[in-house]
Length: 268
Image (cartoon, rainbow, N blue to C red; front, side, top):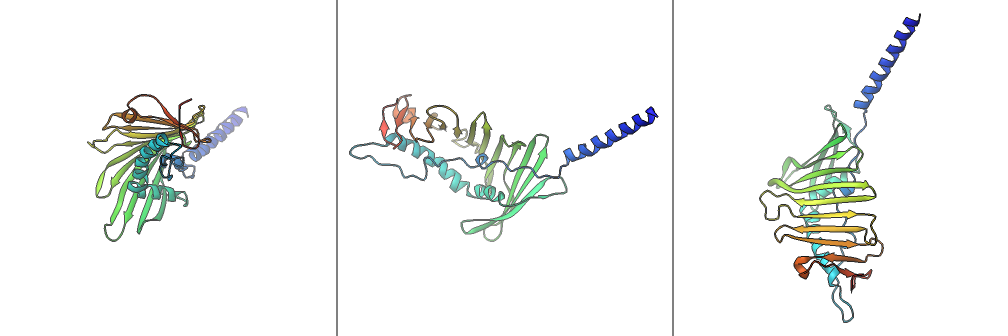
């Protein structure tokens, strides 16, 4: 009797773990899309403001220096990366469908300027990572089919990952690499790096982060490879007061500050 009972318990436990094991490996749930911040850097504290001009009473040179440097990368993001940005953002408006290989597909059309693009974003969970691939097609003049515009990986918990963005269908070379982390110890960092093969600015980057530091709780680090120059910009997201260090421009390694109105001040 005891032997029969033990066998029954063993078989029950075996079936339980077999069933739950299958559910774990094939849950039927799509992976979460990486956060918007994994792809789109936040320039809102400096753009689209026009650079402020010197007046009789005040100067805005230090904050303007920050605006000019950030504007360069803003152009790269929203002009040269317009299609990758648009296709990624649109994915959040659609539900994926499971594919026969276990991947998930987000499929939709995106309007960028006067052109319509068909986007197919694939996500495949592998262990604690999700692998992502975005294929883009365009019909009509200058059309192309299933161009792998970007790919990447992310942690299934959505706390870190990377992207590799290719330049364009007519020039299919690596263009921008993105490394990102989110909500780790109250901090988040997104870094864009120029990865154009043999390009003069290959290795140049802009890194944007938020921290819990006082008094400055946000930063940009902008490295110009050609000049071998690192620009450091720090500011407070609430007061908007900040500072900049730019050895190439100022000729020294000191920080140069502005107040919450953007006016130059002596650094505290």
